[in-house]
Length: 71
Image 1 (cartoon, one colour):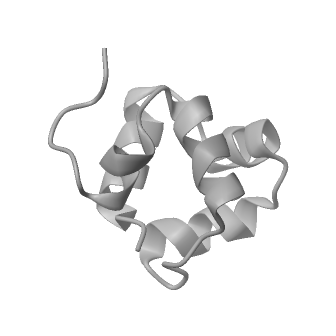
Image 2 (cartoon, one colour; image 1 turned 60 degrees about the vertical axis):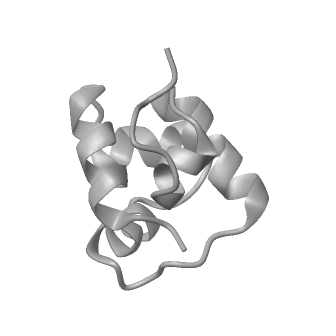
C-alpha cells in the first residue's frame, strides 16, 4: 500500500503541486489528492513506477519500505 505521507512530503520537497504531479504521470489532480489523503491506497504497479520516476525516488520509498530516498 502506498504511504500517503511520504508521497505528499516527496511531492512538496520536489516543488510540485498536485496538478503538476498529475500532469507528469498522466492522471487527474483529484487522483493525487485521493492518494495523499489515504482515500486510495492501492495503486497499479505502472502508476507506482510513474510516481517514483516523477518524484525521483524509489517505489520502495513510496511504499514505506525504505527509509532513505535513492541518491
